[in-house]
Length: 349
Image (cartoon, rainbow, N blue to C red; front, side):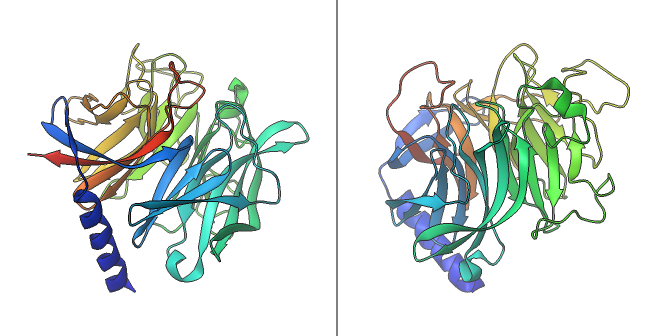
């Protein structure tokens, strides 16, 4: 199976690299080549890969499969209707380690609860070209038209990590009884891992505002990107049980018991979304600054290294290239835009 996966991945990358390219200037790291792979996406949010296929969630409730340069859109079947209002909807996606055999995946989506918008984490089954919910792992996560967090990922330890938003209620992020404004950690069956920092709780870290990026470094550290209120966007390195400050502290402010960010944007706004390690460097998709930043740990800066004037939502490294998806059609966009795109970005020396 491993051999087949690698051959499929090489074939996919070779095909996409052969498509016509457009050189784009990039500050700081030379030149990138941008290729448009798919040009008819509708508010995509998350991108993952399986073998020779790419899977992309769209907030209205679809998963787009891209294979051999062709895309197929299919609606996800869930027990609670997916609610897309503003920035809510079908957001994060993670594939089980044995997805190619089992078809098991995990989705984070918004739904209507008795008290308003909420979010839930569900297990789905991919079979006969459909994604069908088979189990609700966690529900009742506070929801909002904008501040839902939404990124999910399976960590190196085999557990599910879930980034949740503050849902425009400041008390949630500091309240360990609330699932809002947190990084949550679950077993794949939905249970609470015995070694979580708070006994019987899904909470892995708290004091987050609107985290939308999760990535692990080669040495196993979890990096999180999150939106600030106006500026003060952050990149944090997560310590289990850590309090990351919202709304008690921003940027360089210090507060007892609060872990300061690794780097923050000050009065500028990046609006960081998906993040990924590429050739050992943390790359950050950004909405407001319309491009991709690179974390420079030595001087704690985040230069913009690529821009195509698109609001970038997520990144996916594949070999020597990066895939990126745009959300120019999001409610925060400052201009009306046509359909969103899947891009392939290749650095040039």
